[in-house]
Length: 176
Image 1 (cartoon, rainbow, N blue to C red):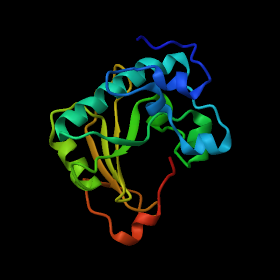
Image 2 (image 1 turned 135 degrees about the vertical axis):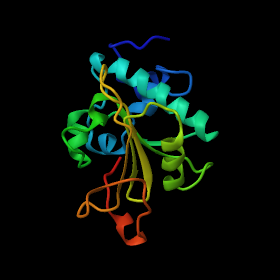
Image 3 (image 1 turned 90 degrees about the vertical axis):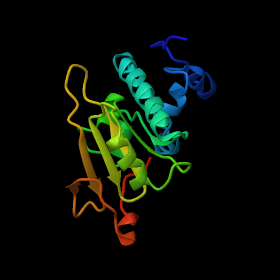
């Protein structure tokens, strides 16, 4: 079923739209923060193509890992992105990034490293706070930078490479 820019405000209808065989629009736009604050996190029509690309990337990652992903955050409109403490330039706000774990494969660092070693054309793989993986696509028409980063604390910031985080740093991070 093709994505329609006129999405129903009903959560059940929103969740039935599928940008790919493996992911619904509801999964890609779900935000506990948006629900808690009463924010509408539906994407504008211009981001639907990005969400299709994102869903395809997530399916490819599942293929690499051999296990399903558990999404913790994907699309966040600018208002939701601000509410969770995301940076203004976040690819989440364009429908080009997702945060997830893959318990069937292993801890987030192992997941990030497996994705980084794959042939997938991913712009960024970030091991975040020792708790999840962020994977992002390049903007349409741009080449993927194939960045591999780690952030263990906001004080320390991003580090080059996929590195372990000390347990004390895991209390930091952005909400979904």
